[in-house]
Length: 263
Ligand code: ATP
Ligand code: TZP
Ligand code: MG
Ligand code: MG
Image 1 (cartoon, helix red, strand yellow):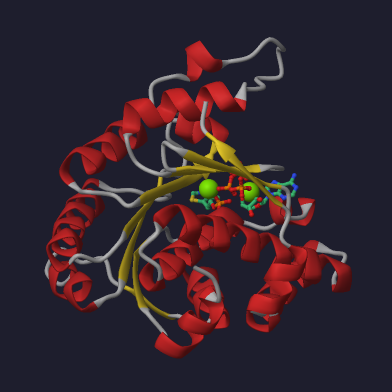
Image 2 (image 1 turned 135 degrees about the vertical axis):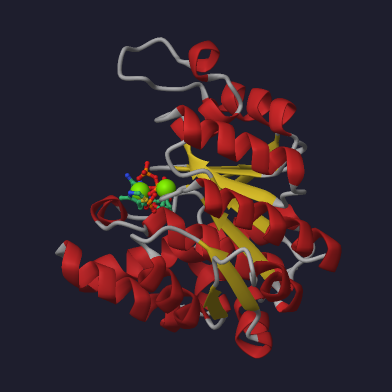
C-alpha cells in the first residue's frame, strides 16, 4: 500500500485540473514537484477529450462560473466513463448559494472518488452546519460527529483539513497532525493538496490509504519547508522544493497519523 511517491515519480500520472484562477500556476508547479504531470483545461469543447486521456481529474470550484460547472460535469462524466478518480474541492461552499448548489449538482451528476475541504465547507456541503456546530461560540465542530454525519449524507470519502486533518471512507478514520501554520498564510495550500490527493489516487486504488498518504506527505513537506523558510513568501517556494525533496522513507519516518474506526 505504500511507496506512493515512488509510483507517482515513475508513472508521472496526468492530472487534469479544472480549477480556480487564483491557484492555477501554484497547483501546476506543486504537481510537477510531487512528480505528477499537470494539465489545466476548462473549455467545454475539450474537457471530455482531456479527461479521457488523464489519470485523474480535479474539480475545484474556487472561482466558479455557470460555464465552468457545465465543463466540470462533462469532464466528470468522461472521467467516470474512463474509470479514473475524481477529486472535488468544494472551495467556499456555504459562502454563497451558487457554490453550494453547484457542488451538490456536481455530486449528483458525477461519481466523485474523494472530497477535500475545510470543516465549514464539508459541513455546509452536507447541509449540517447548524446541527454539528459545537458548544463554543467560535464555531468549533465535534469532528467525530461531523465526519459521521457528513459521510452518511454525502457517501463519498472525505478529507477534512485544518490544524488536524480527518479522513474517512465511512469505515476507517485517520487523524493526521502533520502540517504547519504557515500553510494558512499562502493561498492555494488547500487547492494544491486536493490536486496532490488526485495524484495519489491515480496510482493507488485504495482511496482511504491514498488520501491518508497524500495528506501526510503534504503536511511533512510543509514541516520541512517551515524549518528552512520562516516567512510566507519564502515558505510558498520552499513548499514546492520540499514536495520535490520528500521521499517515501521520510514519510514513513515522520507521518503522525492515528488510525481508528469511524463513529
Ligand atoms: P482554509 O480556507 O480553511 O484555509 P484550505 O482549503 O486552505 O482551507 P486547509 O484546511 O488550510 O485547506 O488545509 C491545507 C493544508 O494546510 C493541510 O495540509 C492542512 O493540514 C494544513 N493546515 C491548515 N491549517 C493548519 C494549521 N493551523 N496547522 C498546521 N497545518 C495546517
Ligand atoms: N478566492 C477564490 S479561490 C481562492 C481564493 C482566495 C483560493 C483558495 O485556495 P485555498 O487553497 O482554499 O486556500
Ligand atoms: Mg488553508
Ligand atoms: Mg480551500
